[in-house]
Length: 326
Ligand code: BDR
Ligand code: CA
Image (cartoon, rainbow, N blue to C red):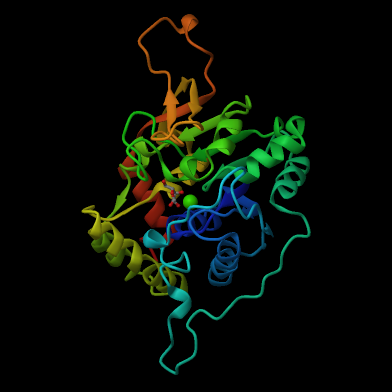
């Protein structure tokens, strides 16, 4: 049986790459997608989600819901400098040779349910089976927990891209973006007792996609998806150059890849909590990595992904973008 997936996301360039991976992987079926404010506003994230579906044209369209438009207790901090003003590397502005828009505005066919209710509804369709992959701030998940924690406990796995456990953050010296944007939501989800697999910056930073590698692979299959990926990633590569990295960091695709194939990593049960009070430490993931007897520590709140088989992951990712045997 295919793995039923729900993807909670704030597309975002690397979110879009993760969705390409999910929608082109035969071992899973993307049942539902919930958007959330993060990289850009939730309106833009939702529009982007339909742009991605327009290009990918999956055989079965997932149910899509617009989720939370702001964090639980704070105003939104977004990242247009990373992902472009439109969240997808400004491809909304690109023109074809005849002057028409290369990516016309898609039609939005939205679920009548809001994001948290679609999460609960989809769990109800697949009790004990659904794998939820969270690629943005955890606002929708926290709201779903507040509405029905017992239903949420029927998730099979909850794979979260977020946190910086033993490495510096990417927004502040100590905080990763998704946890920084909505620390209260991240704290509530981590304290929930759900079967969380945390995929932090510690390992996503090892998945770097160099421009030359992507270009070489996309040249093998010059289809509309390849063109979309090439257009969208321009801004991502520019940003990588600005910050001195050798390519786009595939944060969200790594989390999606681990949802599909947990053997890409290994897990360590760890007590991780999220700082909501600190002036300098907002959104910090505080992991109890002390070398003391396990019985003297607070119980683990999640299993943290430690180490990534980066080459195997990159092969999987590139193969889904464009099979080498095209
Ligand atoms: C996370 O932040 C976002 O900008 C990315 O999409 C990813 O989910 C990495 O810190
Ligand atoms: Ca994201």
